Amino acid sequence: MKILHCADLHIDSKMNTNFDSNKAEIRRNEVLYNFKRMAEYARNHEIETIMIAGDLFDTGIIHFSSLEFILETIQNYGEINFFYLFGNHDAEFLSNIQHRLPDNLYLFEDTWTYYDISKKVTISGILTKKYNDSSLYDTLELEKDRINLVLLHGMIEPVQSKNDYSISIKGLKNKNIDYLALGHIHTYSEGMIDARGHYVNPGCLEGRGFDEMGEHGFVVLHIEESSYEIQWEFVPFAKRKIFAVNLNVNGSGDANDIFDRTSHCLIQNQIRHGDIVRIQVCGSCAIGYGVIQKLIQERYGKDFFYLDVADQTSITVDYSKYMYDHTLKGEFIRTVYQDKELSEQEKIQIITCGIERLGGVV
Image 1 (cartoon, rainbow, N blue to C red):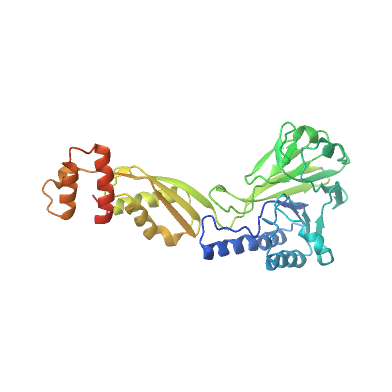
Image 2: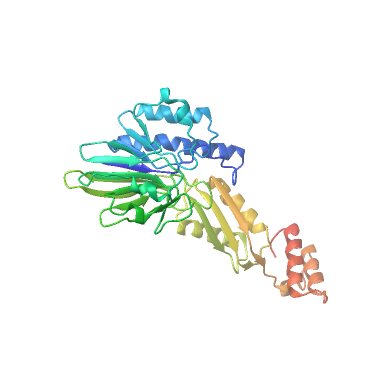
């Protein structure tokens, strides 16, 4: 038996923190369509069950078209059973459309709900916003001789916490849990509950901003019922990856060198065409502040879905080069250099601003 475990799709997230309205709309559609891509993956890999551990949607304000798309997708993949536990971002919108729920969509109540999906495997979960309530764990009853998969939406804590979404490891010990399917935290994590059980958080399915970088995807469980063995693997699945990288241009003197260093940085970090990228440029060089940002944007901007260049460079000025330079730039640099009332730092700042307007390269 194979089961897919995902969480935190955050469908209908606004996506307007980094993107303009056009790209925000593209990303919203990509996140929405990822649900269908995931279902198609399950079909192609003969996965019969998908567990959604919360935050399928981002807020209570859901586009009707998005809701229709999700319900239609679930219905169209009727050979797959979907078990959906609401998270803290999910609105209980489905309560208003119970008559329209697909037959292969299963929800959870505010008391422990149990689904026997085979002769030996049970999926259970509870709809709550108070995981720090010790009575929650006291009422969980799982049979010792079954393979028990439990769905919760919260963060693992070694001891009981005041945070409503903190799940107590102590409270889950010796409860006959084999696999605790988590959601809520957007990065992958796993660990042991006790000698029998493990917890796994797959992270979000798709990163939305620069606080959600790295690989994102879902987990596929392989269950051998005859031997009670469970193995799982993380499957990278995001439509786009998000990167924030540092680019050191110290000592660089021309645009070609800047391009060489940028290309090397992109290759080294395995950044692909169409990814979402932030490049933070640092170092001291002979190209004026703001010019490097423009050079990189013009050269690489079309290669990526989104490129943000943060220019934190300082300018290096070789005054000797301009002693006999009769251009406007040379006259400007000599004038600033000969002003004895200015500190070296002030001279650099003035020259940086001036060079930016006179063409960029010192």
